[in-house]
Image (cartoon, rainbow, N blue to C red; front, side, top):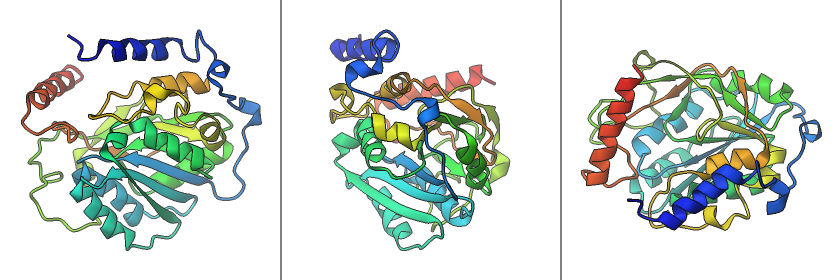
Length: 296
């Protein structure tokens, strides 16, 4: 039984009809057409937008990659949304904030955990306020390894479209919580680096949650489902991100694949946003194992 049938119905309405049967202009959006999009002059400016709730043990690798493999062909604004209750993430913010990294600007954003749980709220804030040429809406388990962001710069300068996504990534198997790379009981001082031998290639077939590289003109026009109250409402728990589908339908761009080598993703069994050892956590872990086995 669904815990909130009315919310499920609303999500189905938005995901199936917005931008398809019901045009974006009905919701007050005027999305730039492809030929209207501006092109970067000089080094592209990329804003990376990330949310973290109890995932500091993976976020550390993402932020470290910006320190270890400093971009030279583009400038980066790193915008992180987190909550004060997440003490480990706060410690990471304090650690990296003291590091000055060429071509990288830190942009730390502290939200109430209720606002953090509805990811569209932070993404919307970033989209509306950004001055970047492009925004990469991502998750904290992605790692931009050596040359990754610099390789993307050519596409950001030449692709006149509203949405890009990486054509492939390298992923781990599902790692248990006590794996040395993500074991939270280990005392490891950042910046850290991943063991790339643990990863294998994975093709990406479409733009989705963590793989949406959005043109700045489009982001500023649409926000992230900006005036859709359903997706700008704080919540008491982490909500499934239906708004990602709504956002893509709304802007009218489904994404063009681009080559972004050296992009890595850490896959893991335990979901940090669910209570450890809870019934839902146990069920979701079993589902993830079953799904992973079926894709081998």
